[in-house]
Image (spheres, rainbow, N blue to C red):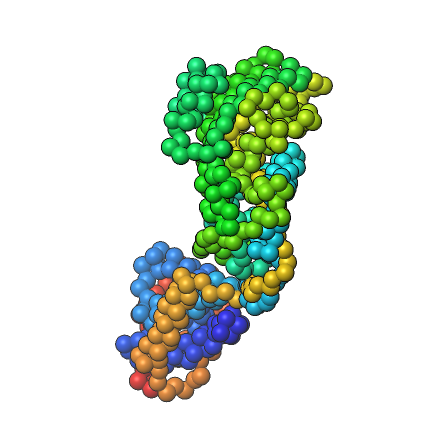
Length: 492
């Protein structure tokens, strides 16, 4: 249809209107109002915007009134000219996705791998990626999915599964929700006193276990001092032997830090919720939806080192920090507090940036909160990385991009309206004016024949066909504005 209208319908419309026009001048009700209009009709001035505009200007200038026939012809042609343009937008050529059903075997959460993970492997994997200083999106970009419309800058809600490339599928995985932010509910006196801070933690958590603890640690590399107090209500591992529940935890972290010149202090509150479940994933957008919990996943801790099984990622983050603080920890189990000094890694994890040799920029409390939450995200991603296996195939949908015509609703409606107007115009002028005629179309031959038969057309006192030059304008040939009457043709 678009090809027909773009290449042939203007010619067809013009030919048909020319045939109707030669019939129209034979009827008094449809004939031109003036001889000038006859020449306009014969010249097809109604077939395009330039000719029509020129005629309208002349009519206004010389106060000539054209017949309805001329305006219907012009309107029908204008609609015919506009129709291909609207049709090209209604069915425009653009990118089209072709859907193909397939099967993929991504590395994703596997129940067979859960039983082989313990807290030491979990924490070590998370610390390793956290030590890079990069976001989880930078390291595990193709395996992390966020809710539609959310930012990928801060991982406050993400689903960790497998690399599905550009396909859409449903996979099991880990979902982390939460965040860390400065907390103003702790006084300065409590922040700086380990006993008072521990009392605050006990009062804040109605139920707590071995995971509630407090440390007073100091690190002093290169004039940087960090005093660290923390507590959390992360669930005790022995309470979920046999199954893995939701990991829902809160932690309070008090920091007293300085780089030798700038001091930063305050309390940070972190909340995290880790869920095991299934979600619908969209590979091209990197988003997920329709998350469904997998409640009470079976877990066998018989393979775990020292019978210590996987733990909440928020608690794992704090334990990792304790191990990196060195040997100055108070109330810290030797199982967690390593003897190796990894303080340079700690500074990078907490957001310290070096400006010169043995010099660091002091972060503010917001940066500390962001970096600690980044550690929680890395602990979650590390856990998901250890849980992954490619032992299961999943159905998926892949969309291949190609080019084709796409349908645009607004322009489609507009094109249908124009098509209806165009067809209505042709039908109306045909019913109104089409009659048997002695000529096949209205052109220069018919106009010249009528001119020759009516000798009353003069420019002044001379006929138009004398040997003297004439301007061809109404100002020189004033008789052209005279009403058109051709008794020899009317009624034929």
